[in-house]
Image (cartoon, rainbow, N blue to C red; front, side, top):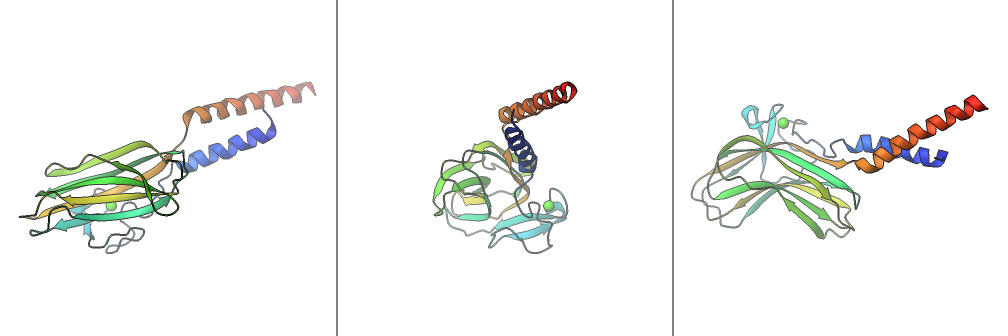
Length: 203
Ligand SMILES: [Ca+2]
């Protein structure tokens, strides 16, 4: 293994360690008690205490009686991605009251003109639930993808005749290190170390 390859592997290992970090800003809505920095969330609000899965704040939306069928209420954040890499996404969702609507998480990959080139949805809520984790794992950023939109979505499935209320917390979106490549690098670095050790002993 040449020094250059080893250096490349070290860069890969460091970036893999960094890649396991959550790419989202303010993923748990704890930055302020009122606003949602990092998120585009018109019509949504910060709920407190029981509205949080962890910390004291959660992202909340209240669907009142009288909304039309087929409406979408979306809070989202866009993060840069690398085409061909895999990503894991997750969040926690609580349904406080349930009526003629559903909630879910959606990951949308976009190209450099904002076109939607990949769309992935968790299952939707089907009734009142305590906080439950929803995940989408090993989503591959398609060719041409430059960003991913991490979206909290509420959708009316009919004209609402009563209230519905949802809270979200602790979103995560992170790159998945490729185990095969990492294992090869680790083995290569180990082999390189042995060779250098032997050279030092023989030299
Ligand atoms: Ca929180």
